[in-house]
Length: 258
Image 1 (cartoon, one colour):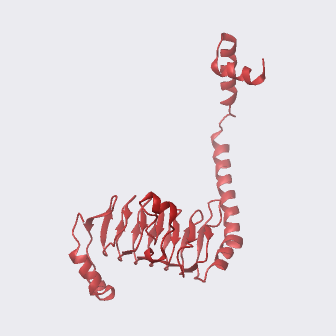
Image 2 (cartoon, helix red, strand yellow):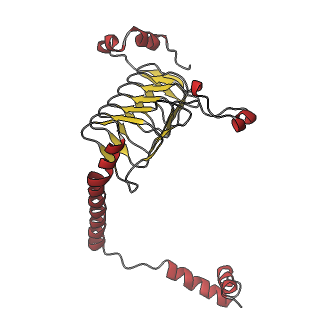
Image 3 (cartoon, helix red, strand yellow):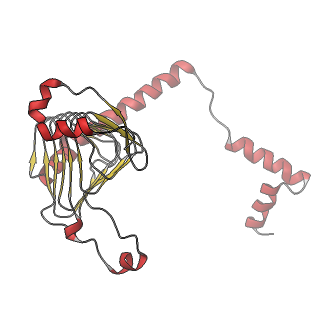
């Protein structure tokens, strides 16, 4: 009897003998050292501190300088959260402009699409890119200041064709690529997606897992697939002049449920 056949018999516990071996094997696999609260709490804290210090060292002296070398412009106070990857995945010819005090999770991606031209990613001051986000840029993705971005995907192109033959034979047309413009103080919820030629106004909120393919007026809350307006927030009067009559009118004309 070969070793593999023996292992199978133990796993199946075919006879009382193999059943005893099966129980013994499970006992060995589940074995652990005695738990000593004071010692193991201390060891846990030591491990956490050691990992944090090690990752911060590489973040400060290696990964962030590398990221800056890839940017056309990068302000002060950059913070790349080093969760183990160190740098976001970056590909393509794309201009990256980060403002001051931008934070970015290292497991994101910044990709310049070959179908586009003059690709540019802009992120304003104090914006927190809080989860791994994939930016697919064919022309321009612009994010304002003081935003919280927890999306899964932000892309300025509409994606591939619905028809399978067109999808098989044709690339994305450069003419179909628009821009994603996100204003200031926008909160983009967890696992949401923003795709296509889309403008999101200041102070807007994108609900978790929402799928946004059309403009969102300022200080409006959208959710769902596709995203629909579910609530209008108060529009600060002092921002009417700053945002302009067009944006204020878009807010006034917006209807819940659309």
